[in-house]
Length: 377
Image (cartoon, rainbow, N blue to C red; front, side, top):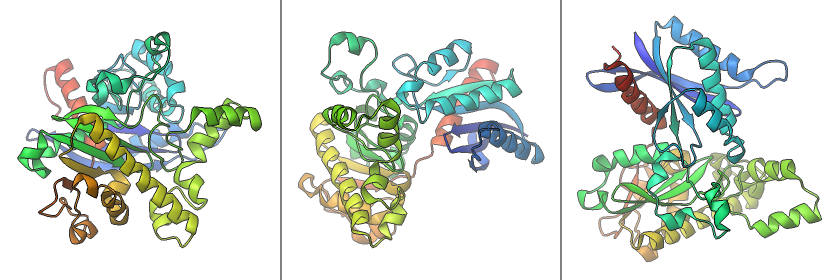
């Protein structure tokens, strides 16, 4: 059985899925998450990927192509791209922009290239969907030469946003689907995207995966003056700041309890409640900012782990958006219904499950057609 493998290689785990193509549809037949057993004596990523490949061999899968989530393509790669040496070299140069993601994304590609040097591999970029963002949202107020060197706002979670937009006709009223919609990708990694006529217009996260909203362990937007202060007062170097802002902040840092929203919602700790309230407060603030950037708002969409499964968090966010006409249906919200807005709500409010793996597989199928002229059977 011919199939496509998708890999999302991270620092502590690898998420994977296997798709076949039948009757002009991609069908997921297998998938899961492999936690990495980190050791200085072994290559945890190679061990995990070899385990995945062995499992596929046992169920009779023959791989024809592999798609990889790659967090950063900068301004150069605005669509999924077939991997070659030149592309890998360029993507490696971007690792400092996303140190918790990019090197591990590329490690998955390297391992597959060594094992199957002739197999088609496709890099699918989290930044690509945001190529249509308006120019002003992409700029920092810094010297022009730095902007030209690539210090600008890129946006992430593009694969998730792209998939959700493809679902608009299924979930949103027709008169809203081509309007001004804010999609909230709320999970361990968190961002928001203002979509106009189904294209990215403005986004909360910018140059790095640290920007914007508080996340599981990441700070979100943080005053650069405070960074200078930490360097001076606490003698923090690059590595110390990286650890603080990427791994010790966000929900974990504020609560002192956990980075997992499910744990916080079940906790009696006042600091856990504070972390939840701060998270919802920041999200609601960005709703106002994105609505201002788009000059209007027709709907809200929640997606990803928190967005799809945390009614209490959605309620807090929507309560702070009543000034924009948001009115949530309590019963539907508690059931994680597809539509959670009341009939008299000015804003159409929806919960749309994301599927980044399917989005990657779709890009891989398109690449297979371009290269071979036929679909895998």
